Image (cartoon, rainbow, N blue to C red; front, top):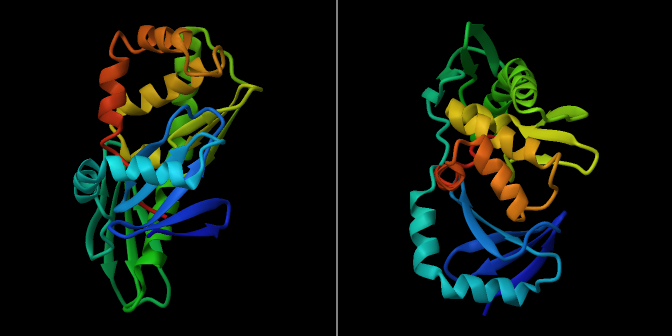
Amino acid sequence: MKDRILAKRMEVIKDRQFGEIAVKRHWRTMRVTVRARAGRLVAVAPLGVTPREVERVIDGHRDKIARMLEASPRPSCADGKAVESCWLSVTVRTGNVRRVTVTRDGCHYALTRPAGAGDAVVGRAVAACLKHRAHEVLPGMLDELARRWGFVYTSLRINSSKGRWGSCSGRKSINLSASLMLLPRHLVEFVMLHELCHTVHLDHGDAFKRLLDQCAGGRRAEREAELRRYSAAAWG
């Protein structure tokens, strides 16, 4: 028997096999999907779906979910290299300091933490490095892609979202997660194109898919499949 509790801003299902599974609801979602993010499970469901219906989806895919959870990367806060991407690198070491300090040399961020500093403290420092670099990289990239493809957006906000790479409002305001700094360049561009296409089509219908496929050079499905192998929840 599964126990349900109401968490802040989301529902949490306590599953006998997987433990706590966060359930998020979104008006654009058409069906229940389950994703592994940094060693944790997150279910995204349409607004009208009950917790019991989410549980039935989980029951029907237990083997697949178990494999997905096993393959989900868990962030390491041990001394050494914490992040390595085409945008930045972050290393962590323990030193004679009273609080976490950060120094920078080009695209390399070096974190020094005091002995005994917990993973949560280091994780927040790594997330801050991602956000700092994102503010340098993402605005120019988005502007260039919008000009290239003739899209118009009203504003850009870079956030620390761990559940979504990006979003676009009905007012054509785009939000991008700083965790995009963990992705290769072609996937960052794909996420941006996805949100820019929402300035024309807010839903994920056929017209949206055709437009995104055109912008992605006919590789929409391939890019979507590749993107699912990454998690925006790795740090923070």
